[in-house]
Image 1 (cartoon, rainbow over the protein chains, first blue to last red):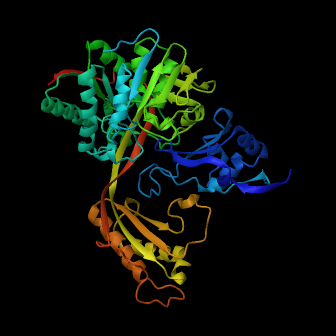
Image 2 (cartoon, rainbow over the protein chains, first blue to last red):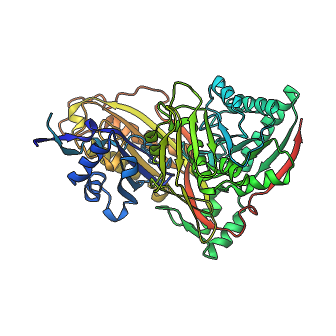
Image 3 (tube, rainbow over the protein chains, first blue to last red):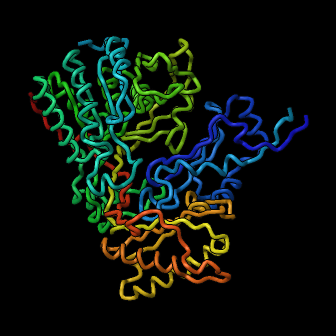
Amino acid sequence: MATIPTPLRDIAKVIRSKNAGPFEITLDIVFKTKEDFETVKKSGVITKELVSKLYNVPTQSIITFGFFDLVNAVKITLPRPRPQGGVGETDMHAAQQHVPLQEIRVPWPAT
Amino acid sequence: MAVASNDEIRILTPSGMLGYGFPIDHFRMGLALRPHAITIDSGSTDSGPQKLGLGEMTCSREAYVKDIEVLLEAQHETKIPVLISSAGGDGTNLHVDVFRDIIAEIARRRGWRFKLASIYADIDKGLIGRELRAGRIGPLGPVPPLDQREIDAATVIVAQMGAEPFCKALDESEGVDVIVSGRSYDPSPTAAMAIRAGFDPALAWHMGKIMECGALCAEPVGRNVMGYLRRDHFEIEPLNPAERCTTASVAAHTLYEKTHPFLLAGPGGTLDLSNCKYEQVTDRRVRVSGSRFEPSKHYTVKLEGAKTAGFRSIFIAGARDPIFISQIDEILEKVMAGARAYFAEVPEESYRIIPHIYGKNGVMGDLEPHKTPAHELCIIVEVAATTQALATAICGKTRTSLMHSPYPGRIATAGNLASPFTPLEIPLGAACEFNVYHLMKIDSPTALFPIKYEEIF
């Protein structure tokens, strides 16, 4: 089947970021269907290495990374660049750190 | 008052956060279903360290009075216990007493009478120092190391209690009407009610975990939610008829604000949701089974603390000139170096100058993948120093230098910045930083959390 590179923002139901406590940022990508989840998982595009590159964080510092079948979701947890709410904070709730994930392109069936 | 049967305990949670308000008609619909307890959490670290650092509360006192009065009215009518956790957001002793006073004030005004238990969660710093030296305290995730200096610097340190102190308060005081607790693991009040009634702790913790956020597990997300815990499963349903729980919405809720989707560590053990089964019972209700709870080898509690870290001032300015914008990094670097040279008598490590450049990388900082700035920038320069006056002085020097700084190719020689506000330098008050976020091993899950009982009328 012919595929075209399609950004995750056009595929996923939820792409979000949030604090998980004052020292971690957690990122969720939740898919609409099991089929979409499996297609993205099988594409092999989303890897620890990609996250490392997108968020400028060494792979060994990634706290959680995985495809979780029960919830059709990818979950990624990273250390915060600085403790939440301290001097130099840019995003108290870490609610706007998800955008690089929206732009990930995966091969998607052409319609 | 409804007594939990051997087969079912029902818990009503009106909202994920006390003080945000909740629809009273849906709450009354919940009361009609004869719950055995009302639980509500008011804790969160999410809005920042200034609560622990400066003794601020998440919501205003007026907002808490409004919500608590609705809960007390329900208690007065139905006689079921009301359990409020993490008073004021940080759950310090100070805020437990604020909640206690609010309850007393309402009781007096309305002519009501309550048996109240207040559970405290401030932890003695001497004890924390001793436990640290004994090797019984470790970091929770990527946290700066703890030492005696940081313990001393923290304004106050609290520990998140588990279900045991709530069970103790319910056991020791015959017919306790209201419990107000200091810092708690959010699911503890709900879990305590169910565990004390003899239900499976794994299901109790899992139901508590979902309900502590109110109806955030529903589609669309809401406030009032009802939980029905039985021998081998629990069911969850929002009270607003326009909302529904679906297997997807309930399963996905456990992702929210959590490090890991299935392994949720709490006081005394880890909840493992990897083998859970979610079934759609009705259009709006979901049944959950298969939750597991793995007790930890040592019982640990999470310590939380924040310190004040000097004072901050900022300035806010716009930039529109493309010649200036194309050189913003170099210009700022030069201006900040100039300000540092001007304040040479101030120890360099005692203050910080941090630019936030919106339109470039203001939101994501070093994580920003896009390197090209927008056609206009909002520049906020944050200065943290040992006093407010010094922070404002350094901020002012940085602003005036940036305003008038020459740069290659400059043809707009009157000024580089568009300033929207006066004062041009804005004092922000004391800055705070989380500096304690650690796990401490404890021998008794109740000994650290003293309980005070009283009759309020």
